[in-house]
Every structure is written in C-alpha cells, then in structure tokens.
Image 1 (cartoon, one colour):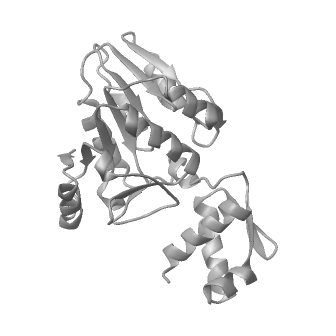
Image 2 (cartoon, one colour):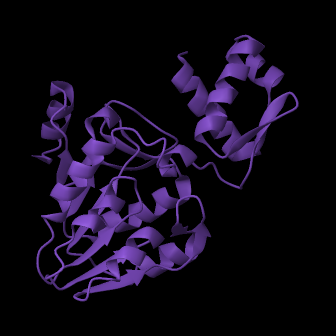
Image 3 (tube, helix red, strand yellow):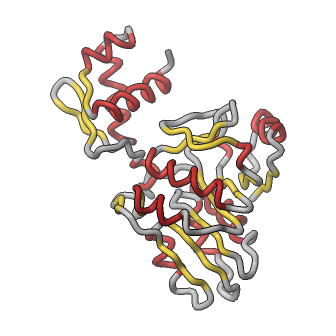
Length: 254
C-alpha cells in the first residue's frame, strides 16, 4: 500500500473514531511504527489533527483539509488565478449563480464585471465581503455554522437554505478528480453542500488545475457526469482529456 492510500485510510479512521494509536495503525497496515509516525506528521501539516502521546487526534468533529485554506501553502496559485479569471468571463448578465469557497473559485470575485446585474449565492464569507461592494451585484450568504479557517458556512442550516434556490450556473472547486470520474472534496460537510448544488444548477462549471486529475481525497461528492464544463490550465495531460471526453465534458483552458 502506498503512503497516500494509507494516509487517506488513517483519515477515515480518525473521522470515525476521532483518535488513533501508532501501534494500532502499524498492526493494521502491517508496517513499522516509524512509518506511521511519519504519516501522522504529514497529516498534521495538512489537516486539523494534532499529535498526542503515542498517536493523534482530531481537533474538531470532522476532518478538515486546513492546507486548502492557508494562502501561504496553496499550490499552483498562478494557474488558479487564471482559471478564476476565465471563469468570471462566463458569467452572463442577470444570472443567479452559486460560487463555493474553494481556493480557486473564491478568486473569481476579483474579476467580476461590476456593470452586470447578477445575484451571487455563496457559502464563502470572503466572497460575500468583496462582492457586496459591487453596486449591481446582489449577494446571498448562506447561513449556518462558520468554519473559521475557511471563512465559510457549512452544516444542516446551510444545506437547507441552499435548497431554496435555483441557479443559472454554479462554479465549484474540487480537491481531486479520480481516474474513475469521481469528484472528491477535502471536507465532508462542504462536500454534502456541493451534492445539492449539482442538482440545483442549470449549468455546472468545475474549476480545477491540471494537478488535481488522477487523484483522490477524503470525501466523494459527485461524478463528472454532473459537470458540463471544466475550466483548467494548459498542463492538462492526455489521460485527463480522454477522461473528460468520455463524460462529454467541455474543456475550457485559462
């Protein structure tokens, strides 16, 4: 078993039990305790996990991929910025759109056409704070519990409120796209919100840099058969292009 697969299984155990022991994991995976300690050290840098004596535990009730929200640690920043810029040009006049709180999608707000009249629905506090400054844009911030590190809302209230809307277009991010066409998120509760949005939008745009293909993460929230268009960078490999063509997904390069 490779390290990435093992780490994701450790995260799954943490999601269920909230704490783990090094010796138990070593026995479960048939590897050394040193290897497990190394895995846990990596996970603490990327998720809401802290090391304990002989193991590790969750800081909150659910696993959160904290590295996704730390601007200093976000990878492929320029590609994400260009993807967001391209996505913003696809918004049409008088549309009601949904934008999630991903590291790529939240950059879209910097490229809005301030002369267009639109309604923006989002769970991102960051997006709402900036978008509300545009005179012609109406902003709906979904309520719910606040995830401080992500500056977004989540949970049952958020999921219930989004059902009151229908969208002309939705712009979503994803932590990974598997070779099987499944979409993954690094945080299960926000993933549940995306599941609803996929069914509420007439057109769904997925903003994803080329490094996210042929990968997987904690939570599966959908499939490429729910996506109309992928906006990505020029580094997209042939394997990924074939996968998107298989699902009849339009590709737009930033």
